[in-house]
Each structure stands twice: as C-alpha cells, then as structure tokens.
Length: 59
Image 1 (cartoon, helix red, strand yellow):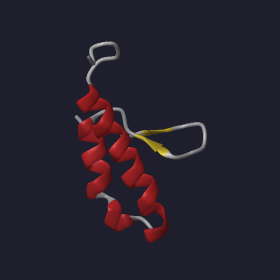
Image 2 (cartoon, one colour; image 1 turned 120 degrees about the horizontal axis):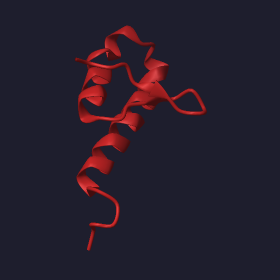
Image 3 (cartoon, rainbow, N blue to C red; image 1 turned 60 degrees about the vertical axis):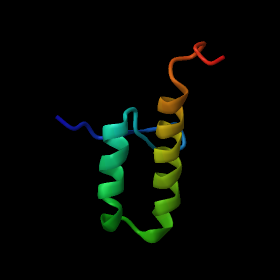
C-alpha cells in the first residue's frame, strides 16, 4: 500500500517515509523540471531524518 505524500504549510511535498520518498522520485518525469528541487529537498529530508534515528538517541 502506497500513500500519497502530504504537503507542508508552504505546499511543498512532505513524504513521511522512505517508501513515499522513493515513490516521489519515480514520478519526477511527470513534473516540470522547476519542481524537481522541491522533490529532491523533501527526499533528502526524509533520508536524513531516517538515518538520524529517533530523537534523543544520537550520541
């Protein structure tokens, strides 16, 4: 089951999981090139957050 990413207050894509982020990358061809940076930033944010782990567990 794949859910659509939500949007943040500014209307930027806001995926909440790695699967949603990858799905956004799969749909890049459907978007205008000018929208690509927003997608890349959203995917980067998800990956960074996932790699950081739960809050408070970093040493």
